Length: 121
Image 1: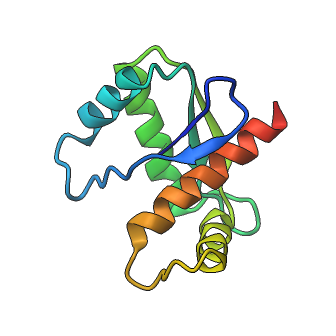
Image 2: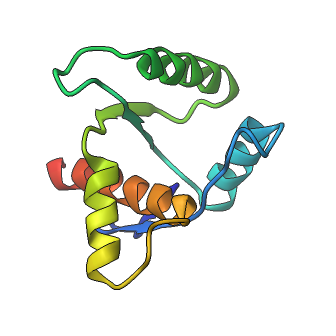
């Protein structure tokens, strides 16, 4: 996850909620939304490199549908293609080893996705 500054200009990495390790990950997410007074949720949509839906796309769409039943906060999906490789490159540039730090890559990728969204506003 990533959040923006109060003006909605700069994204910063926040945390990772791993649904495999967190049985009630939706409740955990809702708590973060409340704690940070989130007014809009931006979700990365994992399209294929051709811009078409993938198996993961359906999983994310189902997640968005589930989240819509749990909160009234507007949810926007954005193309997340290449966000992880961009994040990995940025971490390497900063001297962060990425081999065993999937969580750091995930946070940085969330930041890339959010920043790209903010830049379109």
